[in-house]
Length: 366
Image (cartoon, rainbow, N blue to C red; front, side):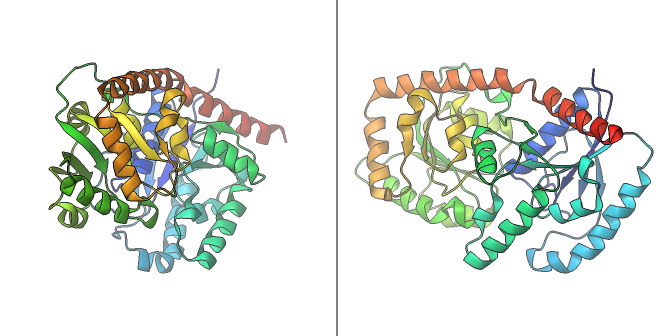
């Protein structure tokens, strides 16, 4: 039996992103297991997500600005240290760092209480080779002086290949709310989610949208994005455009759509295609790494090589859309994979808490 822990989930901000949502969901699951969980944010983000009922501690009132982050870090570290000192004596405190921007604060916490929730290999997002190498060295150095929670098998394997030990896995999976048994008419051919970031490959999405809209088949497309400027850029070629829809709206959209297209260069997981799979929407993804966690069995046939040009991807889309039998087979497989993973992920909070408690007891014994 694991005694109650006091767990602090450290986030850059509550801005809308898959990584933030997954960290909050893990916190919520740990709280449901009887542990005391709160969320600490370094900055305020625009279009904040709900904290799932968890108490939020704001370490500053600054709005997220990348160009100011390094200058603000010393003040944030001081605020963090003061807040952490207040909690001493309140139980077994654990700190879960969720993003490379939060990692420097880990040096203020003893190693046994220092945990990193690794949802991606974040240095891969940096375009400049020198900065990428520097960020990788800093992040891996911190990882080696803490304990790692890997979000899936792919990440666990990559971390071990780098000589790191993974303490426990907390497999990310889509929320059960995305499961939809309905057999609605699928009147949208392709849905995609567009985000900022070089690795997200907005350039490829824009090419694909233009080709699908202007090609001989005139495919019906839907775009989801949290970013107003991206919406403005693609509005001319998207048949449907949804800016910051809620989960219910996304589920309804997925249930109307035949294919989910993901063109990212790299993903630690890539949650949106999996969410779409819950309603039988068929995923078609570039082989960006983390998507292999759910593109299994027959769905492996829908992994696209990274060197394929947009024209070849568009042809693959047309081949699928003109083959109802293949689409139905992949749709059935997508729902089956979604259900199997949902069952496996339901006990992850218990495993994470047990690993944390074991680490604190090892500290006591030493």
